[in-house]
Length: 208
Image 1 (cartoon, one colour):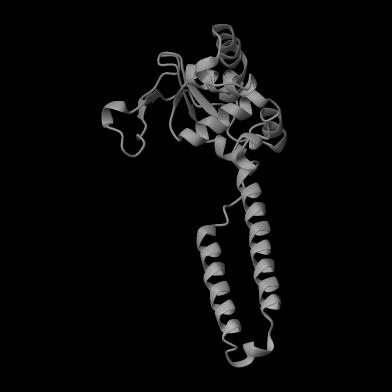
Image 2 (cartoon, one colour):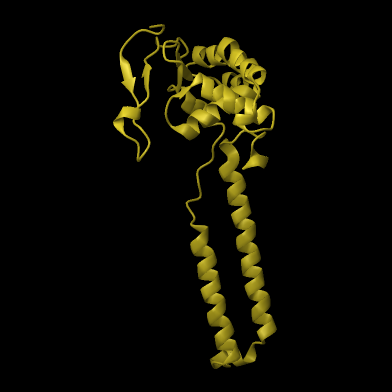
C-alpha cells in the first residue's frame, strides 16, 4: 500500500448499504501541518484543483480519481460526462494524477491511495474551506414568501372592508407596500444565494 497504515472506513450516504462503503488507506502524515494564506491562494490558483476540492466536499466521501477526472473534464469541455472522448478524459486524468493530486497531498489537503484509486479530503482541507465558504443564512425562504403572501391577503381584505383605520388607506397604497415587500425579499434572497455559492468555483457558478 502506497501510503501505509490502517484502513479508514467512510460512512455511506443515507439509503446505501454497507456493501457500498468506500474505503481509503490512511496516508503518511504530511509534513505540512498547517497552511498559510499564501499556501491556500497558491493551491486555489488552479481551476482543476478548485474543481477537485469542490467535488470532494459535495460528495462528502472518497471518490475515485477516474470519477474526478471525468467530471472535471466535462466541466472544462462544457459537455456531459457520457459525451467525453477518451482523449479528453485521459488528458485531465494524467494532469490530476501527475500534478494536482500530488500537490494537494503534499499540502495535507487530500489523501490518495494508488491501490484503490480513491481520493479523500484531509484535515488541511478545512483551512482551504475557510477561504471559500460563508456561513449559511439559515433562512427558509419559502416560509418568508408564504408569510408575505398571507400578510398581503390580510391587508388587502382589511382595506377592502374599510376596517378601522384601513378606511383611510387606499388600495393602491397597500398594493405598493406589498410589491415593495416582495421586492425587498427577492433582493435579499438573491444576495443570500450569491453568498451560499461562495464555496463554488467561479467557473461553475453560472451552471448552478
